[in-house]
Image (cartoon, rainbow, N blue to C red; front, side):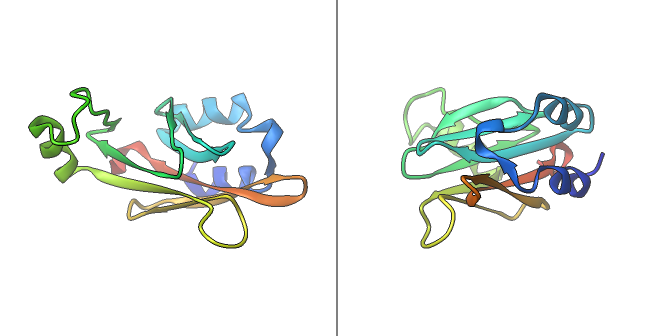
Length: 134
């Protein structure tokens, strides 16, 4: 499955249904990563990478060598983390970026986008990219 094919299947998915397990499994087999916002303070990552990240007021995610980087030093100035971040690909997840949906996602990683809906209205943008591109 390609990112475009998966985005077409996910576009318009209902918030309460989130990402169906069968599509998350298919993304994993295809080497695809899905990133989207949930509630008002959480970013979900599934497919070839599986994680959730607290994102109160938004967050920048760093991906390097096919993994989501975490600051294990618990120090924003950790020299090891800083060196990896300099080389990392970023995904910026923005909360409440003007009118429309609650979550907006920006990245330079080649990707496809889809929209999650709640109550018939757009709630969160989601993106899909290849793990090979990070």
